[in-house]
Image 1 (cartoon, each protein chain N blue to C red):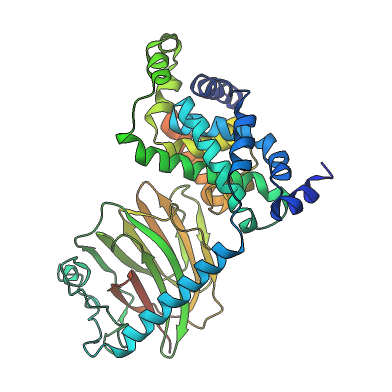
Image 2: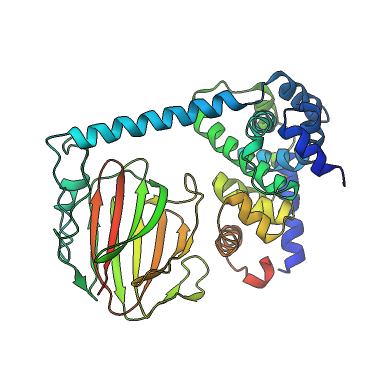
Length: 172
Length: 247
């Protein structure tokens, strides 16, 4: 962990291996975020790959230290997912998707699962960050690029869309 | 339902959607990164050069344009459909100049709007700025895809506002206020700047975003003294301007 600042410095100077070391632990949360936003696993992997390349190209724009990397990277992944959503209407339907949609999952779906999929990707985003990735509120805010109070509001509002009788205390 | 049960159920639903990540994803990303050139100096320099050239061109056009004239503000206190004449896509394609500060009257402690005009389904906010000028302090909300179809400004005799999403109260600097309500707007896609300006100006003491949710954006303005203000919608770029009159 002590070597991460040095890895960031080397990556900023163009060392791809150092960048890969930095980004590796973030790939799993990035994939989970993308998979929930897109509800499409192959597309989520594509989004994470594309976001990683963009992060590599924009690494010098990272404000702050290595501690800011996760929120910064996840915000790039979220943007990539939004772009993927916008362009998917004309793209070819992938075979794995069809298999999955017709496969073994639907009968196992809960009401909550169905409610989750009824939310827009941007509504799912704060829920994934807060509940699934367990990010602290200030990091959720940085990823959403809003103030902590606005982030809290978004989490609560989205959670209420899932279950209307939730109280603030049950969410935070 | 307890907090833990809700979390557990929700995380199970997340697991169902996402499954487990592909173990080969790391290799795939590493390969893509090594094949992609890192953006370096030349791109950055090219971007700055392009921006400078664009500014120069706009500046020359602005100064040389003999047809330049101030655009009329939407009549202060008259939230009529005539607003669409300013924001309509059919308006003159000529660049619109900033209006003279002396061309519109200020209205005091009264509401403005709601104004309904033609505009995008969701007007995307790309910038928010404040500034102080002789006679007024200004906040400018810029949109990158057209002026909003519906907005209003509500005056109030205190600087206490309600956060739109949470319902919590928030007290801004100042002793009166304006609430700018923009319906059919989005401030989180293209805007990443400050959401709370403590300006240090004499009149507009603080401007704070109090809602950006479900297509409604609200900015609360904390003012010193009586809220005397005027409202403009300007083009090129599309922006909503509120001037608070200074003594």
